[in-house]
Length: 323
Image 1 (cartoon, rainbow, N blue to C red):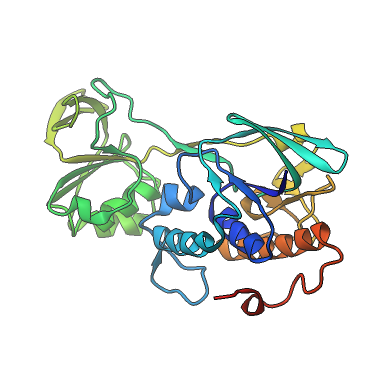
Image 2: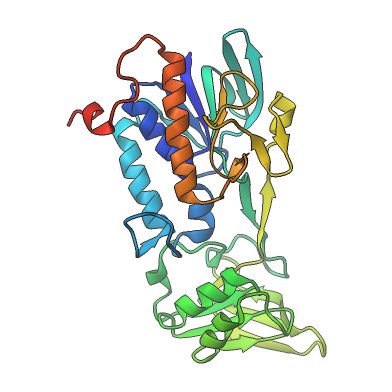
């Protein structure tokens, strides 16, 4: 039986795995997605994040990489089970049954750290789209776009921000939106327009190429005229579909903003804790740094809960780590 199961391998889940391993707790991390990193990796991999103390020039993926390197010190204590979605939690006396899409686990304690849920990018839906290798929904490596022809589809901040970041790297960038006006910040659009091309109001009509797309055909929304672009990559930023776990079905109290927790990150179900963007309490701020603090609090409480008679449960980490 696991001592602790952590649900979610985003920033809070990775840090929780490290913090729990540091205190000699053993268990596993269950992640519904195909990779770790959560929303930060999915949506902000190459974007700068600024609310991590001590780091001024840190991308989302840099941050996740650092968290993962830290977590790996105790990965034997908390292996990550990917593509494993929790479907049910059942309380049985002094332990929990955790049913998942890959089987059943038992645990003494549960920490929910799955953020806002599972994020799936909305796909490009036009003629000719199969599973081509150069249709991308996230950016993990800016260098792959150097001296390439890029079509960026979307009208929000993600589309505009990436178009702006790529315009000095790629040989050509076209920012394409189905409306004349963008939802993105106008200052970003203005800055991008000084160097890149904007095509509005156009929609993707079809793509050419079975394995690798070579051309993107656009249709004007009003006059239906078509234009053809040579492309090396198509970046699609149509937003994401969010799948949120209905934890209330497991007996966990929620409100309109998330899971209701106490100051020590306990839910109403004894033995289940929650942290990060999935929780709510008076004054809650949905920030990475806030979630990390919540995670430290939760692991401290879980340690005391599991080992009430053990000395030095919550001493400084520098005294716990044995190099």
